[in-house]
Length: 115
Image: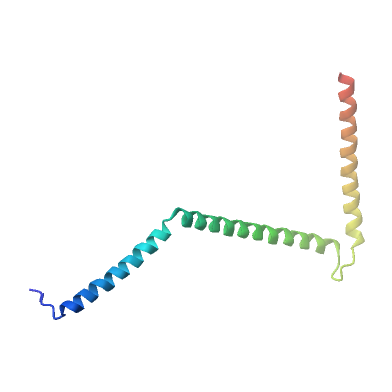
């Protein structure tokens, strides 16, 4: 059988009970703070803000990488434009803009005729 004799004095037992009550009270206070609605909302906001910051950070890095890649294709190591690549790209852009303008004008004229 287990020895159930206690060699502590009543004062020591009371002091032990008091310490345990204080620890229990602190634990209950901490639990109360953790489950308080304001704490839960604050934690949720912090998580969302961190997630948004992380997402925007990743997007910024991705866009920055693409811009750097495009810049490196149209300039040399010293930053001087490569005309053999800039001129054809500019002509393609001008052609696309011209087609869009012509298409818009045709749609505008055909809309007036149908009325």
